[in-house]
Image (cartoon, rainbow, N blue to C red; front, side):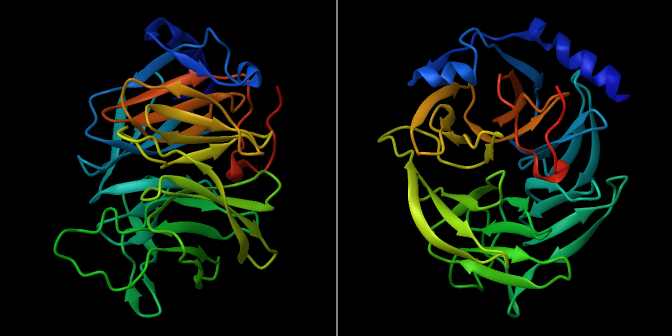
Length: 316
């Protein structure tokens, strides 16, 4: 689909608007999400949606962890299945526009071919031992890929070979480096727009940590940034993204929790199904794509999202 046609269809999405509740906790929340903003359905009928990535060609990549597929979802709701793959998870694009995916069953990081029908395994071992179940991946400011490796999707009956749940750096030359192993179940991760910090959430502890990033890609000074532990509530920190102002958007109980750079919870975007991940896209990177349960939702915001693989702020 031509990108102009895709943008037109995105503009028509409000006709599919759902009843939506924006839960502001701070006055500044309205500068990011308008009080009258409406959540819309882009696609439904999936098994369990994950790994949303907006492509400038005018479609959204979506992983389906239950139906074991990666598809392209278009703004008019139709989808094109690309690949059958056991439990695909978080995804991103590399600098060449190729889809990078965490393949849980393969226990590795893969790169899809341009047509999306085949893949190459970029990494599936560290120091001779198989990864657990890579979960989410982002490109770093240095051109490397950074990913989490919890045991959340370790195939039943398979042995955990690495005795911890780590966060890794995959260099362009294929070298894998362990960055930290101090999280119970590291899940989503995201760099700040200036590349100075890396946020990583822990689905077991239900909190978010922030690390300082050094020029060689190593991390230090890990601190507790925020907590999303709501007793008795369903939903944990999972996928996360930032806007260009440095505000952090993280899945959590009931929806997408928005935090400012100082760690203040500004408000929550409530979603009918528990979200697992999110991505920025659309003509100005102001549209949030939210993968939640069996559906993909969109929400137009007043913010401009930070999209690492674009390397620059879009013009308004």
